[in-house]
Image (tube, rainbow, N blue to C red; front, side, top):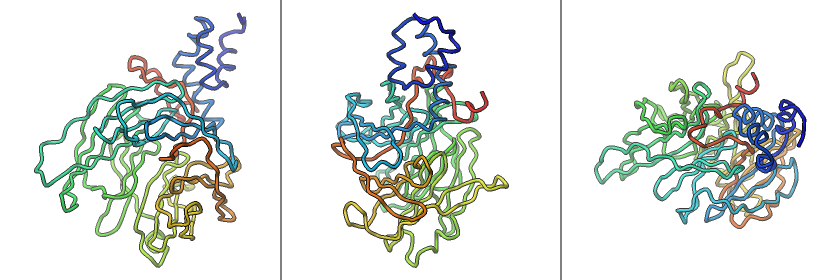
Length: 380
């Protein structure tokens, strides 16, 4: 057995992938103690985040996970099927609700049951049922939006459920915001705000803030709800977004991209433009135009683009991987060119999501000791 000091072993182990660490846990009690300790889980996570080590996940109709290592600027991505199924009691593809620190959140769209899982450790938990809405008249129905993120203030993983009460004629009536806390393993409801969500477009959680689309006085805006302070703020659309094209913007989506909020506008002409919400020199959040896809043609199907989502930068930051209508492409920022990526090993491509490998635990009795964030680790 190695006589290396535990501090040296911790440094060596922190540079290893999760699969190797899971094997090393079985070598001895002392190694098991090192690898499963909350302090090492944090150290390993920080090392992974620093290396920008990224995996891409997808799933088939029966929710078998497929994963691929993210190799910068490669024209081919090899996906490998994992027999691990985080959800076994559904025959429908689950809805992805976010990923943070190696954990992913999946919603069963049939019964609205939510699952949290760590694909690297093959651990998953089923969340308790959220609070039910009050009984309503049959002419109304409820539309739910679930998002998963990390509360940096309280150091807690949270799932946010935005329930929208819709009239049969699709006239919005109201909404209810509920939050699940992994630390307490329970849901709680929040008071309503005067920022009604729209019925279209994706929402997301970025750096502990839940963003959704709203409309006020006929103009679209972005609402940010801080998971820690539970305060809302209004973010105006970039000035160019409403009038960038001669045709109107018909679809708007919000996405998480490299810990930054992205806004994508699809225009009636078929063009697609994307903005990023960044901090300027005075620490104010401002929109910066990021990507333009003037061609209305999907490079794979020769049809108009329906959905675009940014995935990740290349290592040199000169290219961006984009998910476009069930395929992936490289977008060269300087030349504004699109290069197709071949995806091998996938049966059906429902979606592609970036996720890091981590040892973060979902065991409720140790969860509070494993809660961490990138910002917290940088100060250790």
